[in-house]
Length: 178
Image 1 (tube, rainbow, N blue to C red):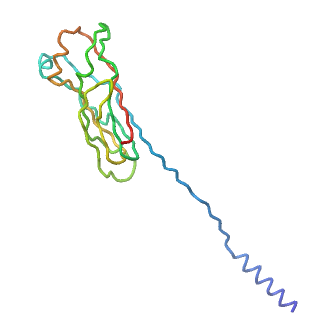
Image 2: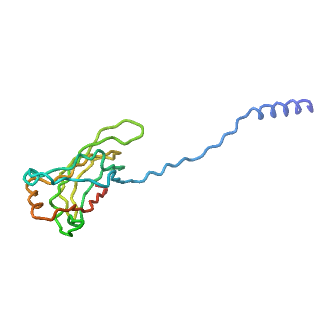
C-alpha cells in the first residue's frame, strides 16, 4: 500500500510538472472622436499686377493638400477671415469678401490601408468674419484638400483706386463634427 502511494505520488508530480499554466488579461481600446485640421502653407499670394486682372479677376496657384483633415466621423470645414485685407504700409483696407476660397480632393493621408475614397462635398466660400462652409465630409477621413484663393471678376474692381501695397488678412480654417 505504501508502495502504491509512492507510485501514485510520483505519477501526480510527473503529470503536474507537464501542466501548462496560463493567465489572461483584458485589453481595452479607447476610441475617441478626433477632428483635426492642419494648414500646410501659411503664405499664399494672389497677384493683381496686370490690367486684365482688374477686369477678369485672378487666382492663387492651387495649393496642393493645403488643408489636411483627420476626422473619425462626419465633419464640416469652415473658412473665415475676421478682418479686411489691410495694406502693410498704407493701412488702407479692402473687404475680405472680395476673396473666394474653393477646395477639392487632395491626397489620402493614411499611412497604411486602402483609400476608400473621399466622401467630401465642396462649396465655394466667400471670406467673411462669420465664416462659411467649405468642405463637408459624410464619413471619417484622413485626407488633404487642394485649395485655391480667387478674386472673381465681379469683385476685381474693389482693387482699383487703392494704394500700391501688399494687402493681407489672416484666413482661419475650423473643423467640427457634422
